[in-house]
Image (cartoon, rainbow, N blue to C red; front, side, top):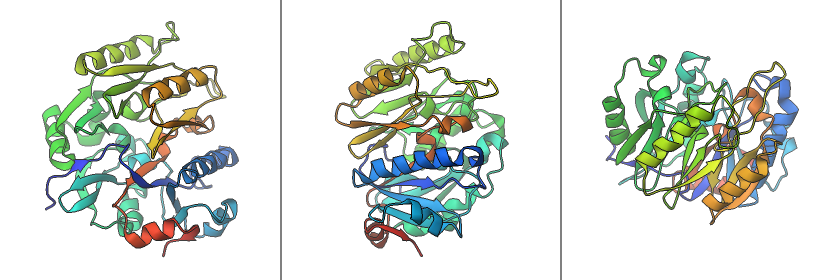
Length: 351
């Protein structure tokens, strides 16, 4: 049994970001060229800051992917079979323990059995665990990485709309969730927010679309202050009020809400809160909307020690997710030394 460990905040120094390559077998096939360009933009932005990418690629596609990458890119291709590319919700989380940094896996069931996730649920065991210094720790509870946000003091955030979907863990109580997050992730305090949801969001209100911590007692919140007539206004205002009550000593940074629909007229859950925190930079999703510049300005005030790097994520939102959803950070000292060495040596395939 592992000693009590604590989930590391996203801004802990990182060796790599995990991505899964979009191919014809994923739901990206209708937008494949545009979405692949988003992935290449993310890889380039990370590599520019000396952050490697562990890129999950289906068997037989390695050479095709290598041809799209500059040879000097810091990309380690790892063979994997997966249902889709939302690695935030099935790749391992990383906890600090007395023995070192532990990869931790929860059960992933396609956001409450909405989609087949049988392949995704095996990625850690079959493909990623072998890259890590310590064995994979498995937790037999359904939970997704995008549903959990934590700060450096161990205050963990999640949402009631996600956790209490009975298709995840039946009638699991709030107390049971808090005990699990305390015992498995070392949470010192757990707050489960009652408000907040975006139309079209398959995740039932993941926290990473709504509220994010900053390293200096701040909260970045996806609000709708710029659209008082929007159907989201009341619920997102209630979320903001709830955050003020739960975190009275935190500074709040409110993001504007874009309005984007697909070709069928369905509202897409575009969130500026779905950004990735990495070494010295925030990779921020933008959607080619009038609110983009304002959102970037909010993030620059919320994270003054970070460079704000805009990534066009308009193609990603067609499948109801964004930048944070497709990525998972790997803190330093989690990976084996030979993995880090190979990761930093250019484009290669891990065998």
